[in-house]
Image (tube, rainbow, N blue to C red; front, side, top):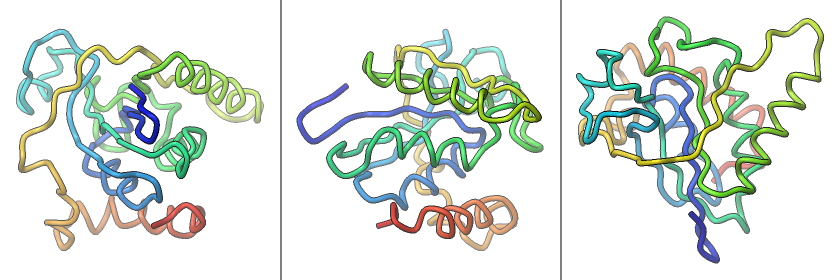
Length: 180
């Protein structure tokens, strides 16, 4: 989906709490909403998705201004902050709901994502191949309100301290020019 100064990207990089916190830091990103995509059950809830039976992935819907934040930059940060070579897992989070996924909203996003993955796969003979799913966005379902702004509301929680903070530190160090 695109308008003159607004485009939507949807990424699944494991737990949506982490992914939301990362993308909220970037210039040109105007909104980030955790949710579910890529499944076959209408109106899923968190428990449904965690069961692994709906086919949905935990994702974030990112609204951004493409004149400020290039889609390529979003892809760069996405792949730098999760492991696109792990199938149906990120770290200790295991299941299809934690799969690496890009749900494109335009044909240009599809092409750019596929080319980006091709370049990553060709960049090293030693690395594992990228298994990130690239699929059209059918429907995005926002997550329940208690998942929204999770990191901002729970910064002292152990999960935030041990898992999310290191990702945020990495983004601040590697991508300072892209930060708000």
